[in-house]
Image (cartoon, rainbow, N blue to C red; front, side, top):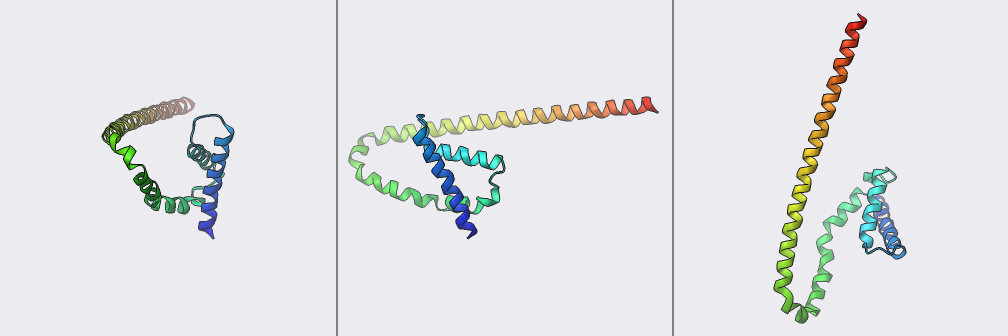
Length: 140
């Protein structure tokens, strides 16, 4: 029963993503709307992680099976796909490398920024501690 409830929550969020896609005239896929809605629900604690974790892990586990119908559909369009296969593979390879490089740089920036913020917080705490010690000495 718990698993069905989790799957139902995920389906409802996906449905609302589809509704937003139909209502809003933006070129954003419904799945992105659904992911943003789910993120908002999780961050706001309206939906707790344990309420969707098992269902989402199941969907991730069976994700490779979801690509079988799309892959089988390529057989139907193979004659028109064959002449452009090499350029498509090159574009896919280049874009994958670019995405990996940009992701690495963004991650590197976030880690450096986080370290900087933590260092500044530590310095502020030390300054406050020193001020409190000085005040305590003055009061003695």
